[in-house]
Length: 207
Image (tube, rainbow, N blue to C red; front, side, top):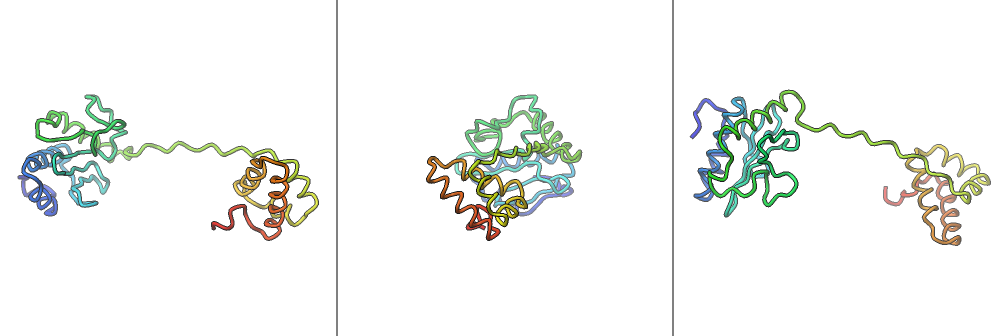
């Protein structure tokens, strides 16, 4: 068991105690390695599973099932994975170390500890979450000739359309452009004018 000085959670003690016999040594060993890799780690339980946190942010978690255990890093995609041990895309089980049925299935202690250290340091440095790529703004779609002509004859609808944000204008343009026949297009243009006069967006029914 862990030394009393470490920040442990009695709920994890209970979780390990009620796990299958094969799982207990695995969970205890993982727990010990996490504490070695991050001495200031804190334990908690989320979604009925043991989790480990650094500075209030999740580092990793473990779980026991009927025939195997699982372990995963919360920021696995950010780890260098110098040993090539992490399964991120093609996984056969929850977590990143495949199905763990005995302590022997775990990477060497020094490797596990090194990975925990790296994961914790990413959190301390504020680099644990990948920066989201900025989405390029969508280009304005060309106005359908039929809509342009109709709006010129209806100042109220034109004013509403002009004051709409780009997304709302796009919804109407796409709807009219996607019409497969002239008849359908003309009906949609007529409906568009009616709704614009009432100040309605294309998807007003769903809002």
